[in-house]
Length: 282
Image 1: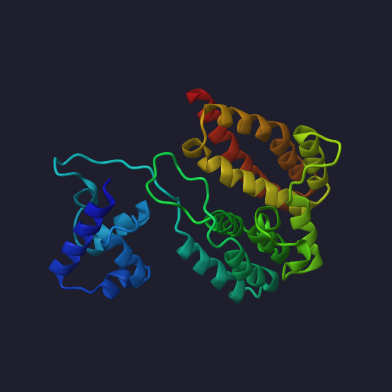
Image 2: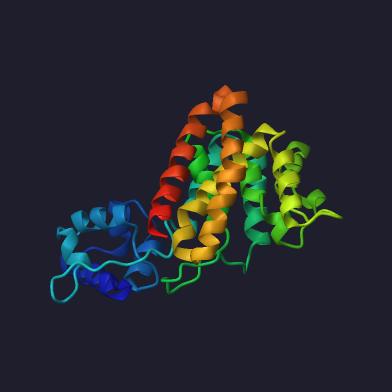
């Protein structure tokens, strides 16, 4: 699916109907800036939005995505959801539910990860801002009914100390959130190799309910995108680590913290579905 071609078709049909970008944005439920980016070929609408756009423009979905020969094109998504939209959703959630730690973490996290990018798909043509990852995790957690301020704040901050020049005491959140982030920050231990340090790392995480939940959702998000980013050997290594360390974390949540058993079930299903599918292909 050629991004520019889709954008051109949206622009042409919008103008043919005599509606503005603002009017189309209102009908689709996005910002006018999002419509502008589509029409300029900077971003491709999410699949769900493409159906809504087609309806708003009174055309078929296929007329927006078919090539000149009338054949349906396929593309690899650079991102599952755009970070700008997720940022707005998370900020609105934090404000409406008065989640003070989450709100403080949001802008701090965005500033600290500025200029950093996620390991992109081998098939994508654009880079994805690093904040796409913690924002996706926060949206995922909240959609599953997690509204705990400390968990959501820790999700947003979980990589800040490990991946930026930030010290733990600089985090603008409660001591409880700082402790969760500290547990989630991997460090090589003196006198131990990486595997030994990793074993201690997960052992410590297992002692903290909220750290377990953040780590579980973190791995689910990473597993969801690993097939397009990792080579064969890295996929095998990541699957092995997931089975050795993450599945016990999920079991611990189900056994010890029944209030999160439904969340653990959903995440385990997602992780297992993905890794079993990938196993069959490698």
